[in-house]
Image 1 (cartoon, helix red, strand yellow):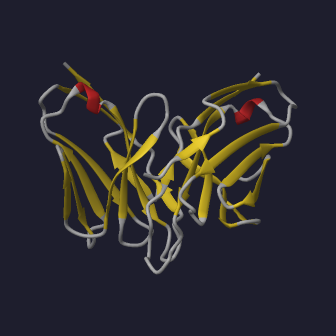
Image 2: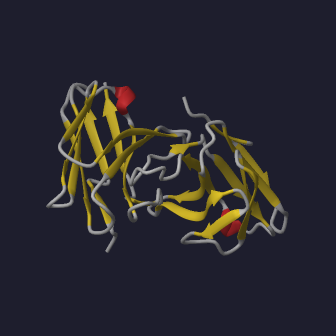
Length: 116
Length: 110
């Protein structure tokens, strides 16, 4: 079974702090995703990575950056946390197209971040 | 207007009832993903389908490609089915990026 893990389930930070959220997958997947989930808005894509050191902005990249130095690990960085970044953050991975037109995504357990 | 719309947004049911959640989409390629999210956050994949019908236990998913509509049915519902159900559509061919609906919150009471 694919396993996607996230470094913390709950995190409380102060405004202005630098925050790192880590995601690790163990199935050699090409693609990794970071989402945030807010009530009434559903899941929104922050950043997407399709290979080591490769990244694409999603729908809401402002205030975030990402790092993918190894295939299995995808980090989300909040350079200076703000209260409007209080949210649930979900990481996901997928195999990559590999000849199929679409592959399902596998999700981590989520990190609920509160910025005070 | 959302590109992926779910209805209803909230649903309550008594244990044993038959439940239907609907998803309509206006974008994306002709495939659809049903996901389940329990309280606490983790999301699990239920179905990925591009035609017809799929069944897993008490869950049945159908899709009508021409009408761009899918339904998720739960037969003999149980309190453990209480969760948020999310449909998602791939943005385009040869990418795994998804467009998500806002979810349907289901509560099943004993």
